[in-house]
Image (cartoon, rainbow, N blue to C red):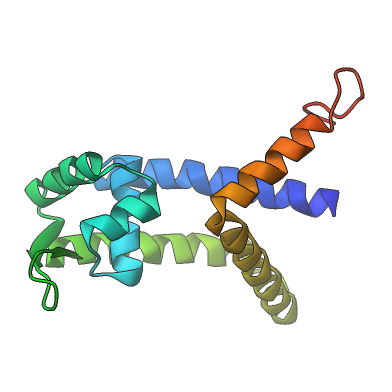
Length: 166
């Protein structure tokens, strides 16, 4: 299990590096790219939704949306039910850029697993889905996550061989 966790972490690091490079290719920052991805995945979204999902303050989200709107990647329009709120959605340009980025990502993932047997790919997809679900659930309760982390840190003593890299 330790080796599996190590390899999942390696994939996460590679994906994060890929995400930073893709954001640069899109001409936006990593946070903006994350926002665009959230909007594409589950949009349209309210600024409050984005604030919660990205862990940003309301003023930060407003500034980010101003930049994305100026770049013609998103548009704000009145919420159809809550007239006090707005919804953010991708423009046609934003949708085209995100679609191309996700296609490239899918192609890159596919290229890396072509040599594997189809059954193994399906099994791997199921394992990854389970890992993703577990991580999402854990991340959804930040207080419990912080408590678990604090407990683990408290259980380690200097010189006990459990530090970084062990």
